[in-house]
Image 1: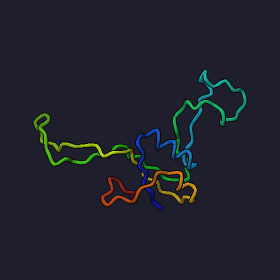
Image 2: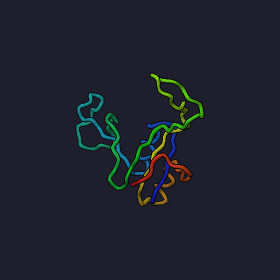
Image 3: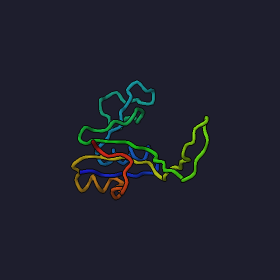
Image 4: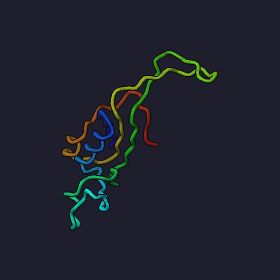
Length: 118
């Protein structure tokens, strides 16, 4: 199934994906803030990048722009003036449980999606 996510920013997206068990935070054992000596990731200081879990297909779109209807001249070219649409967007293709769906800020499928799965 296809799901559409909208958050306020990228950090919130990754936090939601992690809570739904669709992403995890990498931990840098070389980071001086990580003082534990065992191999448990649970209590390590999150210091690395997020990684998505291979249980799903993830398409991070980010900030979407739409034309205002106005144009501007840039370097001799007429280009449309764009404005940001509120939010940070991603698409997920997965078989989600009800619990996972409840952890994600899902939105209705857009009438005119910016990107679709091939």
